[in-house]
Length: 394
Length: 234
Image (cartoon, rainbow over all chains, first blue to last red; front, top):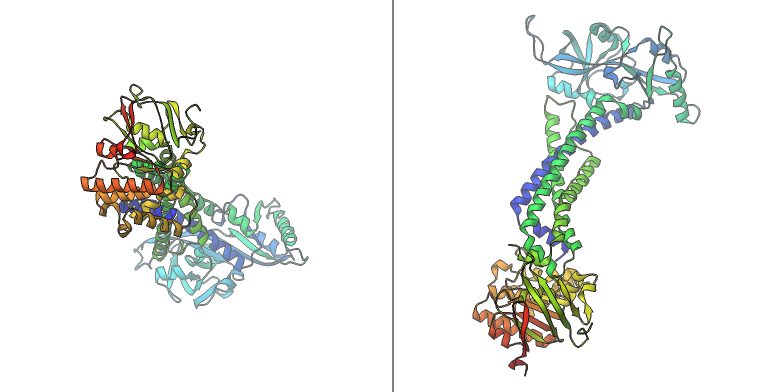
């Protein structure tokens, strides 16, 4: 018999208790993995999108945590376009706006609505190149003034709309000219329309929320080329001759500081920490019970020569295995839950099914640490038992 | 180490032990020695200190005063009493104390985790050999719940021999057995003690068990009141 076999046999002696402990901890670990996984997916999706589009710098208003809360004068774009080092520019007005779930039946009908991310793009944005057009076509300059839009794949599925159909944004009908698939989960769950049309409709004339650029690399030192352009953009002045006060960051820096990602991460960790604390207490309770029940038996083990260290290893081994089993069950549960959530219309477009391996590994490690933390006190308590007292214990 | 010469394998010198409540003396100056390969029975009425003495001799507990010597070495100076117990002493208890979730073969292997290094295969082989010695090879795969009380005590006896100890301490080894099983276990103990040259100390209420020993040490009120050689030794 291996020592590990002995540890596992101890766990299978009380199958119901072991199963309930694993279940309780699995819920905690699963919650943590699911939340951290979703947070990770958001960021990974945005990073992938930036990488695919070859974005070198992301520009938003200084102090704005992300594009949704940023506001820039569109005239700045003309100054940037004039910079010879700028290879391409992609500008947008990003807005979280109300959209009807179905079209109004008549003038008095107000259909149920939902919040949707609308991206109003320039017709020449390089972002179109990255979109996989799965129905219809991409927007172009000839669509200006016609209230036309493209739907992300997830959004089209949720609304059951395709090309030729009409959607209503800000109480105005828009013709769907195309359906696209993007590497960016937010774009898949959103709508793209043309900048001028949306500016006019939303009353935000000459406003963009941000832009990204590709830098022309000529010196052989890409970082230096990018930094030079960054400094030039930082020095831009607005139409009144005052410093434009822009935030000009690499995509990674932008993601590191992006407010919605920070909030998502913070929420995920906050709930995870609560789940971890509950997990440790649950494990502590189980292992204290287990040690109390086996006081007599631990006395026998000590009597036949087992060292305090081996008794500690036995108890910690049991709790670590409980943590490991919980992590496996929790990870499976988290994958299943995120998959199901990703199919639900209410959150579809904001949640991507599947969880990164790195997040699962993180969850497993935390579960084992929870196991060891929860088992530490009972293990020390067990090791301190005097053989004679433990044997007398009934 | 006046009385701690190598003449004795085990030597108790002026042992004192108070009960945990601190009011009653369980042992009150007990001294006696046990030679290698000797079979000693400790008898006396309940509460006279027999089991307390056995615990001190087996390094399960420490005396409040006095010293226990093993091969002339005081146990109080041993750094690792656990290792000493694991390798030098085998214990047999009245209630067997087998682990219920393990088979007989696995129970016998329990002390081997702290004994001389052995591979898994060697541990299993050793356990099977010992079960064969106590006539339990055919029940090696059974858990204690499926064994009779006599069989359980034989498995416990095999477990006590797992690390080939020099000293075997048995606390009322037949106390929970019917007369047939008691006779069987007693014969086994005696045979093993002789064949293996074990030093055997048995705590017992039973005169029958005591008279099989080479010596009988009788205790009363925490003291040794009689120490005699039996007919079996002659």
